[in-house]
Image 1: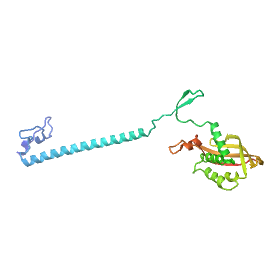
Image 2: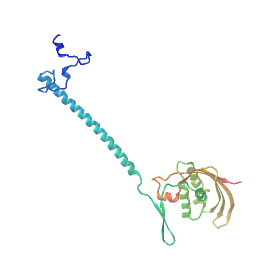
Image 3: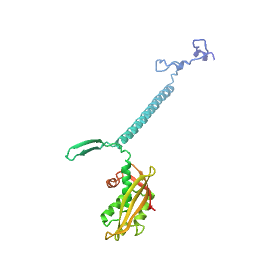
Image 4: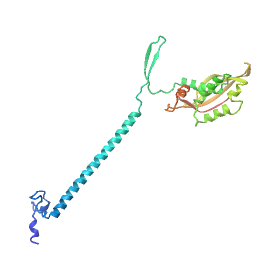
Length: 257
């Protein structure tokens, strides 16, 4: 017991804290610290532990660096993909006057809401093309194409128009053209709500000899429309037939009393 206390000394300040001399970092001859045993097996174990500790710390550091580099690479790839998906082409409009001079108008920007007058004209054309019956098969086919350019398959208007065009011989324009023609004179196209428009027109039926078969009949329709932004799947032909991307959601028509 007396010999054990010889290796203990009191720290200044009068406290009874003890300090083991073997915890000192002061190196002594032979690579041992004060109080360390000269046993070669213990020295080898100590050296091995220090080596493994250094390797583990180094491996953890490299793992953190690798994870950080991976995150930076993912962020870079995502940024490049986003930038690459943006259009780099800016269309520029210009006008050529009758003398052949080019007049710059400016770059094309995001489309503004359609003018109500233009929208009313498109709705009027929809009704006129849907009710038209002509002996010119090419003109009749063109009218039908313009009608379906303003229809989407998921909307009720498409089913109604299919029934009107193909439901009976009395409504099929190609069959009716064998015995009669129909002219449509649009009178008014007025908004009833932000989405629904009222269309009135006079409809006349003529026989193939040009004689009036049914005198002008006043007609009325309610047409519900909506607009969509052009997508990448829209073809050039569809844009030509429906440049405003105005679609008919539903419609109904009847004779006025």
